[in-house]
Image (cartoon, rainbow, N blue to C red):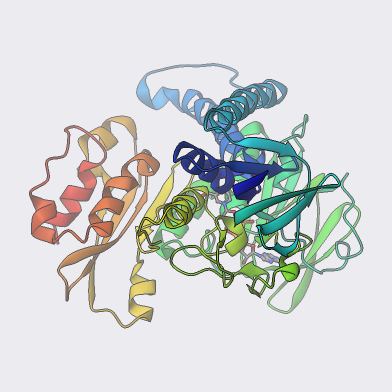
Length: 454
Ligand code: NAI
């Protein structure tokens, strides 16, 4: 049988593409070597959120006194947290699998390699069997980067060094945990293990945490977690990993720090090797598959969605890229836009942002105005955050009189950021935004307040 579409990889990009294409009437084959759901469902977004929710409950109970609630001897039962995480993941994976099957997609368990082209289309080899399709969607995801530093480049000692994958399976909380890399994964893991009782040290080579997030917000997040007991060693580059210690360089000095466990979270790299891209000449740039705005590669009818193109390594970007790719396969005009993709760090407090920061806008020479206000302008925020120090920043494009960035630290940021995303995506004018009615009392009103305070 010749399929209309073979999807390589069943993560968010792959499984959503199958659903959309299958329901549109295409004959689809999905090839997945592990569990459907990819990193996001099995070893990323969802499992970390279950852990972080347990941490949040513990933190709330511990600080209940501020709200007139007394709870004694609050601890995390880590094994129970992991067990619950496994249950949530299992349920979601089976739900996604049945949705994919419900779209008529055929699922093959195994590792697929693109072998070439024929008159019928593209050939993919899995478990010694060749499948053919008129179109391909490459959605093979990404893997943790293992930096070529001493003690890692020779191979990882897994009893000491873990990536986020192994950290989500640990049955015991390490007494002392070193987190190498203060990006998104590092901060979320540091947050959970700090609540679970680890003595956490974050070592980050840049002078700030959180990568490209707004620098004031990064500073507030650091302050909050320093209060909770995390040590941050910034402008510190890890140069060596020993049997039970890590060496980093700061201001020309070499410093050794020991621990029970090390989490390596220094970024992820696209899974573009070993899938046969060279057999059909798909263009790859620094490991990432090159795509156009239709999510098509340089080869006709070969599409790509998700982390493997490294445009923005987020599950929600992957979803949208998959839809854009499938729409184009179906002859519907659709293009991918990247200017209003929200980013969230699920720490406590949460951090969320969309669009430009002041820095990214100024780097482009844009004429902007930034307004920052405390989240305490929201009555609900005040009611639920005793001594909360949250802030919201809005960035306005003065030429267009539109919003071009919103950045928040404070809880529910993850849930309200989409409203700012819509305002940016739809290029609403400031006057149009002023006419919107926000529910009261909600934390989202902080966006409205910031707009009026411009
Ligand atoms: P990242 O790129 O966010 O952060 C890695 C950090 O490691 C950087 O700040 C970098 O300066 C630092 N670093 C690199 N080498 C170092 C060294 N030798 N010593 C000290 N520091 C060093 O990467 P991360 O956290 O691994 O996340 C990977 C991807 O996963 C990201 O693209 C992110 O978007 C995605 N992700 C998203 C989540 C979310 O949306 N909530 C959650 C988890 C992951």
